[in-house]
Length: 338
Image (cartoon, rainbow, N blue to C red):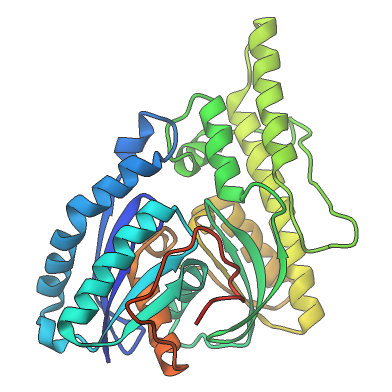
């Protein structure tokens, strides 16, 4: 089965084509990061307008690179939640028009389910059940993956997502957007114990997370040094920040895996590209004899291949949408509309 999938939930426009879910025939991505760097973060209106400008061209390029024609497409998939509402609507409306013109089913895909599916592409042997951490710019979720379309949230961030916190910490440190890679580069050679940064715990919710206090602590340290005219060890602050995020994520995920009795752990999403976090998960998994699955860096960020992959399993589960399909800015991974 050949699926063409569209992803436009934030500032990447992506169109991919897969065969039977896990075989990627083409994966075209247009990043707007340079455009939004001027503003220190994503400007929704600019993101939406740029999706409009490139989405048709990307779809044509994906068909050409995959070596398939429009008549070969068996279904069209699209991210419909969660994300920036204007950006999502561009993808949803393009997908609806395409599906209608081709006379093929339209498959709605939850963005976070897509991030999880990135590991299905990277690891053909991976199948549910397993424990998953999906950690990105907009979401930080620990989920019990009972089936390809059956999820139970065990924990989530109560405020900022980890990726959002990386971007905000980077901005206050004078680093460009997006902040993940610049923060990682700055942290190299820094002392990750120099700054005592908070690791929040939430009473009666051991798997829930909070990153707003960590973000505020970094902001206060930077501003305090500026006000006193003191030189700040930025590398050590970046390293201490990464350690605090990792210390928030890794113990919770390992504890959840132990509770469920799972030996397989999936970590995906943009923040999964961070070398400190990947290394800490590798060590923790090895210490407990568990299998760790993390996607290659090219599949950590937003991409169309992950949406096409998850769409295949949604299709097998009978998920379809009509021309009434809408976009939604927020939606839990376990409470989709289809």
